[in-house]
Length: 289
Image (cartoon, rainbow, N blue to C red; front, side, top):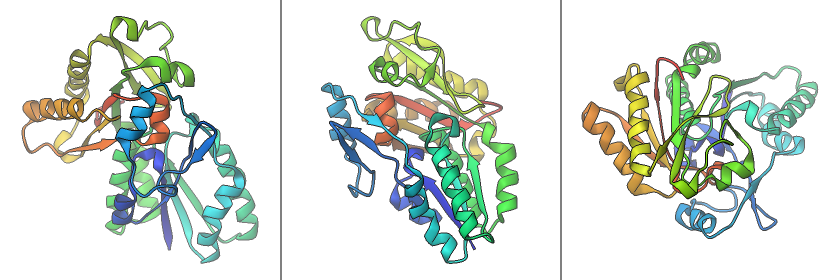
């Protein structure tokens, strides 16, 4: 049997994980020296309380799991005689995967007959979530690992994600966005438009003045790049900005009609530690990223 894994950085909730059959790995964040593991240290994410802390000046940090953490997570599966398929957020965004590789190598010595498969979504939050859910659909339909891997090889780079950051304080601190240094940001009301490229990195691709123009620009990207948009989910995410997310969803419905399958979700706190509050984005099936 192949057991399916993903992580909380993909925005999948425990309820959704149960629906698709995923085991959910919790990726931690730290505030004032206290480390918190989503859905282990709390059952439901109070997104408003978390992002309000950030608005009031809190600057969280994030860290990698260590090899022992991964061994504790994966070893029971191998010990039961099962294999693992892990669909995870972008490998290039965290050193956590180096620690995972070490843990898996050690476990394979103990369990030489077991197999560990991974699919790098080359995204985070909704860029990953779209792929995680599609793979979950395949898994529920009884597709083999080989069939799922073949799908991923073709489709991972066809899920685009574009978003804007409302407060550059968080991205400046994290240093995770290429090309953002030249944007003046908050003082002038400029919102950088960011996307995940086909290497799994966040890259600034433009800027708009004001939230409304930034939202309209996201719709423009969907219009330019969308492919088979009715055959796949369009996922809108926000960091405690439900009104802005609704505005984006409404514009998409206005353009494409009520048959569009739009889902709205909240950015998980670990990724939200880097993007900050009032971030809004969209993920969709595209010609290319």
